[in-house]
Image 1 (cartoon, one colour):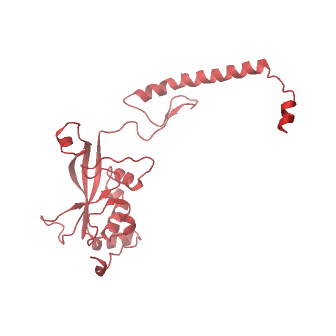
Image 2 (cartoon, one colour):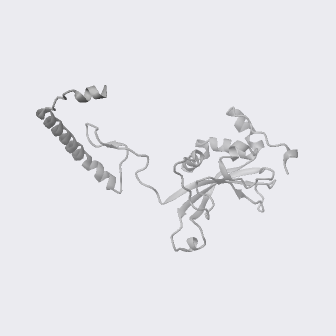
Image 3 (cartoon, helix red, strand yellow):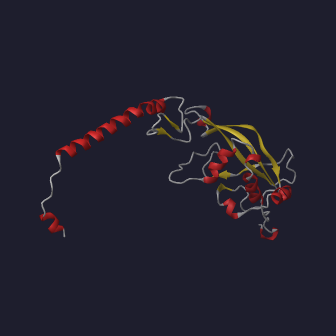
Length: 230
């Protein structure tokens, strides 16, 4: 079949058709370039407008979740304590570390691509709001109080590994920003400078969460049996 096709006389393209096609392609390119001028100006602006069309034809538009990136970010840090009294001044609170989001100021920022750490992403958005608007974070807290293996597998560090789970977990609100190269904090090995804003949610124990879970029809996590703990 290929030999037969090669032996056939192929019709020569019409000169007028080629010219019309080239003119149409060049005209369309010029039109798109002209319509893209305000889009490029917006892209280079310090006050970008996102998800906007710049002409009635809607041929060229801008799309994106963020027009700019802030130099500071707020984070929710989950902390647990084994102290029976959460309000005791000598209670030692230990941080849970996530796989990617900022936590320990000495930890280098992670490389996300090609992965997407969904829980870390949600924790970042939760820091913009309150825990009442993000009830799932209380659900996560209950899982951590019960030493749930699936929930802990989403974290980078469980400070109570090999021990009994914490009696209490609280959420603390911090503001993070990068340390300056050559500055005092960078000289100490810190990647981040953090400052406490205040409590995000108060200390919670499993007993405190029984009614909360019940009203939302969530199964209450069961803590591990004491005889299985070392």
